[in-house]
Structures are given as C-alpha cells and as structure tokens.
Length: 419
Ligand code: GLV
Ligand code: MN
Ligand code: MN
Image 1 (cartoon, rainbow, N blue to C red):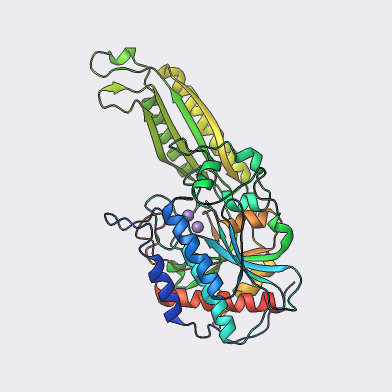
Image 2 (image 1 turned 45 degrees about the horizontal axis):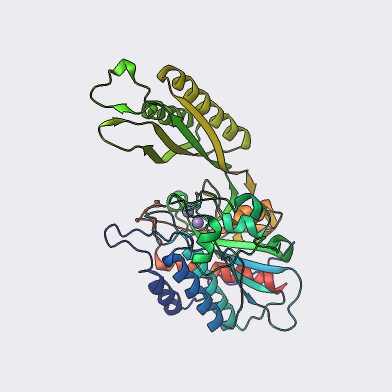
C-alpha cells in the first residue's frame, strides 16, 4: 500500500524538452502519402527509435539494459536506492499506418517525467526505470505484447522461436538483422520478480475522456481479447467458365463469417473485427483456393469471449458445409481479463487538484496488462485523444494534455519511488 500525500497538482513540465523529443520522433516511420506510421518491430524505423531511446537514456546517466528481443530498461538508481523497483514506459512499435501517439507518448512522457522529478530535486529511494517493450502490437509475428510476455515469462522462447512473419522471416533471424542476439534460450530474467510496480501512460484510444471533459483518466481494467486465424480452403477455378453452382469458393465462406462475427458482436454488446485477409492465388479472374482471415475479438468477460468465438466458429463451419469448403480456427494470441491494482490506481488518480481523475475500462491491449497478469501491481494513465481515433493516422493528443500527463506521471512516480 502506498501513501497518498496531498500535493499541488500538475506542477510545471518543461514543454521544450517534451516538444524536442516529440519532434525528433515525428519523421521516423511516417508515410508521406498517408501521414500514418509503420514502425514494424525489428525493421529500420523501430531500430532507429530504440537507438534514439538508448541515447536519451544515456544522456540522462540512466543505466541501460537491452535483452535478447530488444526490450530496453533504463534505470535511475542513485546510491542508496533499494527495494522493489518502480517501472514506467510503453512501446515504440506501431500498427500498419497507425498514429504517432500509441506507445511513444508513454515513452517520451516517462523521460520527461524523470526530468521533471530531477528539477524538483527528487531522488528515488527505490530504483526507478523506464521500459520500452518490443513488438507490443504484434504487427510482425502476430503475438500481441510479445516483448513483455517474454520478459515476464508469460510465453517461453521455445514456444515462439519458430514464428515467421508474413515474408517468411523467422523471429531469430529478424532479431539478428536488428543487431540483437536472442541466444539459445532467449530472455532469461523474469522481469516480474524484479519490480514492485509498473505504471504505463498511454494515449486514450476511444472517446471516453473527450465525453467526460477530462484531460487524464486512470484505467480500471482491460477487456479480455484475442486473435484467431481462420483458414478457409476451397477449390481454385476459372471465374468465367465455372458455373456458380459448381464452385467451392472460400471467399464466400469468409464473407459470411465476417458478417456473422459483426452481428454476433453487436447483439452481445462486444467487439469483433476482421481487419486482415489474405487470399490465394489473389487473381481477379480466379475463384480462390484459400482465404486466411484474422478475427480480433474483445469482450467484457473471459466467458463472453469464449462464447463469441465459439458462435462465430460454428456459423463458419455450417456455412463451409454449404459452400463445399472447409474452415479451421487457430487461436494465435489470447489475453484474459485484467484488473489493475486498486492501490496503485488510487495513487495515480489522486493526482488532480479538482478531484480524482476518472477511472475507465479499456478494450485495448497493453504491456501493462501483461505485467498485471504476471502479478505486478500495475496502473495506467490515459491522455485524452480529441479525435477518439486510434490505430489510424488521425490519432491525436494536444500538447497541453500531454504535459498534464507528464506532471501526473511524475507525481505518481514520486509517490511510488519515494516511499
Ligand atoms: C493494441 O493496441 C491492441 O489493442 O491491439
Ligand atoms: Mn499501445
Ligand atoms: Mn496499439
């Protein structure tokens, strides 16, 4: 339990340092055509961002550790600091054509919060670290929060080392190409055993804070969510000469499955999305032989998630029977319900002179959820996103709100690492 001392809110954050760091990140991985970002793990934009972070950390005299998959920890542990560490941070990778804020806001804010604490003359009595976790989005190897899951032992290196990306590149080769060495066994330390608590600041990915008129919110829970690969198999044939009744078209089975998932999610008040589809041979004038599509499903309980996926799978299988196709379903990445730590959330939420920050649930996945599930007392701070849009170029946060976020994070870290 951490003490919550009364304090003035939102003491000044140096906008110059925050804006300088933000401007340095802005061009990295940005598409001139869409304005969106693709900072795919272990490719040059993400490698550049990791190097940028290491340099920022070293310029602050932080002690930097990089593990075999590129998770980076930067420690501020002055002589005499001891006990379970306090960790903050987020990720620098992005989804395909994503926004600027998802991940980097938490990393830049963490560095700015440490600067602010130093300006206040604060020195931590516990080690205070900033983390950058690798492959949070799962945009390359399909496993959400791969870096943090490996770091806390939620997945083993043996269970992921055979993964291949969409181009057939294996995970160990991708790591080596990025200058990393996973070794024979991958990451060894269990991060969860080394830290006493984790706080992740993140841009809000919906409209809750806009609607409430609040610059900052605190997370209560993350909905259970998962990624499921649907492999539909049929028979390739000529688009002109094959009579409609003679076809075994997996695209039809997929199309009906996408409609069924949407309907089922709407009926249950849950979320279901097919956002990625691959088809073979991918020709305009051929009935496809194969369609692979990924269902992203999110529900307010583990049971509701299991039920949603079961219903969609059953409807897909029934339709495959009628289409003369087949379907198989593989769960690639499933994350159970996460409730954040009430004590740490109380420390975070009390950082507001007008009363506590609102406490909100989220349907987005985060490294914070992985650490919480590994038993680390964990909390999240959200910064208002006026567009309400995320995983898309129009994701946004106003600098003034970001600076309130930095102050709130600094206040939180001061309490957690000073007690
Ligand atoms: C990550 O942002 C996710 O929710 O998938
Ligand atoms: Mn994120
Ligand atoms: Mn994301």
